Length: 116
Image 1: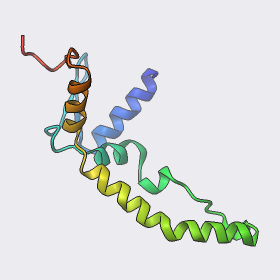
Image 2 (image 1 turned 120 degrees about the horizontal axis):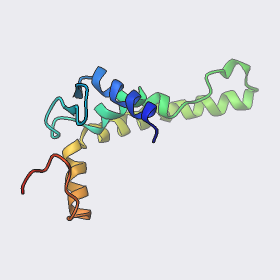
Image 3 (image 1 turned 45 degrees about the vertical axis):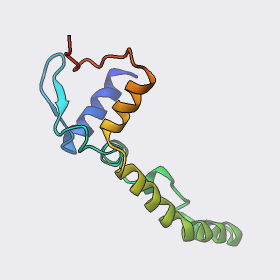
Image 4 (image 1 turned 180 degrees about the vertical axis):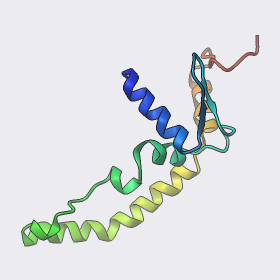
């Protein structure tokens, strides 16, 4: 991942209030405990709304009748699917991911882990 992409991600996370950033090495830290930050918080900060993740054709008026019908049928289910994904992302915290990482790679020591 290039530096510009990382800076943009950090800018988005900072704007959402998820991290605090100061100049210099190791200048970023979480603005809340990892238990309080959800995947939904992170996703929406970096990517926007979930509906942007699963775009349907917005130009339905220009589609042939079959295409418009398919789009309409998808929209019947799209809102409920998006809501299910949102609820699931809201139940997974950053700490859950860190715990999973620790269970899969026990020898991994995050840079903030100063147990030595």
